Length: 211
Picture (cartoon, rainbow, N blue to C red):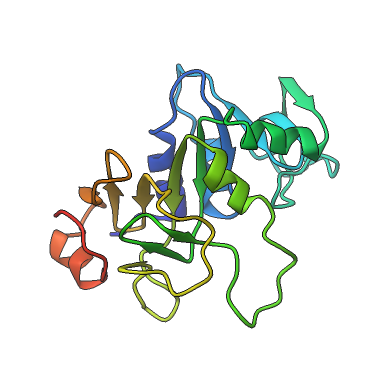
């Protein structure tokens, strides 16, 4: 069976390293906070001005004043700190965040990412997407392998407005994991979800990659 949203988040959490400062995007990436491996310490950062995000609160323990960038209620830690969004973006733009986990609507085979708008749809703005892909050291994308219409999302070239060019290091979908060692190399299929075959992935992927 393909991975669930929680399975995908748990797989992304395996990429966390002790001492990392990590930003989690809206959607599936927020679930990574619930899967931080035991024995390592990471500090989760939110671009709305919080450093040190805990797991999602249990029902009844929510605090309406504690939210992430996706406006979901979150918990704080003893080490949490709060500051202006301008300071938060200075951390991102200054290269002080080690890893970000983002969602995406399209990823191109060269590492381009489109994740901020669909033409004709009303949006409030880009938010922190462009800053994150430009300023963070490692970019992991977690997304469904295909769109709701069944169209591949890992494709030869993005058709939607780009967020960043040649920036993605790893792609985790409900079917598999693609990774590349550097931005001059192609993506390689490195892991399959249980019950998914390489042929299944190839049938739903139009991007070129190393099998």
